[in-house]
Length: 229
Ligand code: IYR
Image (cartoon, rainbow, N blue to C red; front, side, top):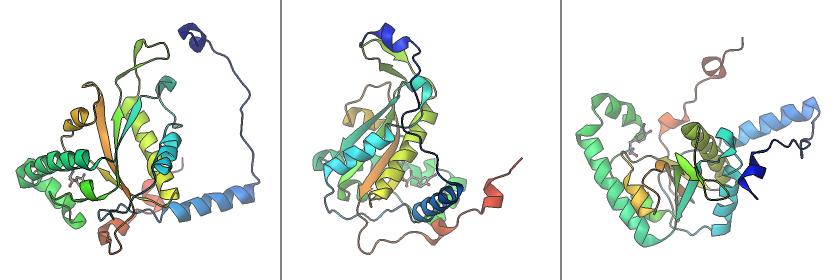
């Protein structure tokens, strides 16, 4: 397909919308809330393998997210190789050590205290898959021409939300890990230095004795997170 053809506005009928009766809408909204509220960020991962095709399907779901100019400015680097996971763990733990030993500052460490996190990140080797979500400031169009991307953080964040939801629906646990800084991931994942790593998603089964911080169970009520005007 030529670049010119992709630039033309060609409306097509909305392909797959199906209106639902209001009662069914209400039931579906409630059912989704009841399911998504069972998602918990997990830090204790089993080493049990997870089939690659399930990860692929969840990434395809993430790739349907709304985004700037439909440039789809994201890349998902999926790491299953134990040797690369080990390198990622070593680099991440070095950064985290500096973070927890001072770089974070007192206020940030105080905020993290109820989560019980520290510089030790064994899950980076134990979980079967790590998915590094990159944002592409520039990317190639169909004919290989580099073009500027728009709303990259917003687009990547929405796609990451889709990814977490897809993985949860598939029955997998996730951790949205953000080593700070995380630029070491460009080289380890073979990405262009201009691409920005946003999230290192840890994916797998929870360990049988996995725990979560009680603090994480506290969700703000609707009245606090929404106003209707
Ligand atoms: N990246 C660090 C610290 C950390 C920061 C926030 I904000 C969290 O919600 C959780 C952890 C770590 O992964 O330990």
